[in-house]
Length: 262
Image (cartoon, rainbow, N blue to C red; front, side, top):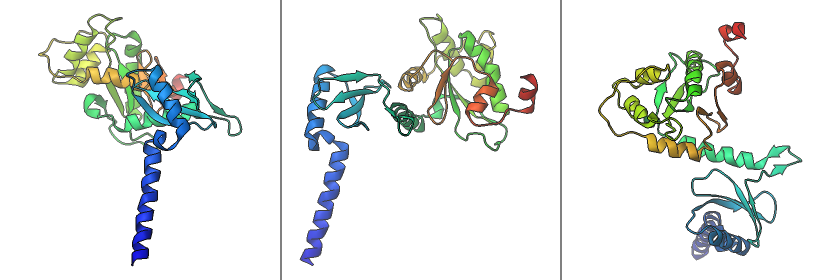
């Protein structure tokens, strides 16, 4: 009985040490502790995230705050690689990109669609993604307006799309208030359709909006210029793209009308 209890305690101790090593590598790995301390000193006040040994021996990889960029530091903490792409030549893989996509997938998995204006297909289409594409739109962005017609085609082809209002006030003065009017409208889809067709959006009583959260989310996802499109697997593209091109990136065949118009 005592021996069984001792084995049980030992097992728990091993599990605890493994968990500790995963959650706090600096407490177990002396080199990691040195490297991390150097990073903390170089970036005072920054939050170090996703700290872990890099696939290449002698390096650690991490991100800072809500920045999507990946950094590498050597075990001594002296040398830092910023925005570096680490490749596995044997497997022909971009390991940094895989890490970024995995991070994005985690973020996307926690996105609340309550903060989006959702365009739902009438029915599910075989091969179409079940999770929506995220599209960050500025209501006064000319490329967002060009994309909107393609978004309607995507939805018609069975692809759900979640529009996240993302006004860029420094470029389009008044875009933030227009976004508020869209979000606070009784029919958000109708108001967004008006804005992205270049028509005025009626003024409405202001309400609480997710605009600031959307701006922060776009930054976390590597946000480029609007329109910014994020696929469910974490891939991203910026600018106006045709529905056919986006469907191809989703692994879907173009519709008959798209094939005829090519």
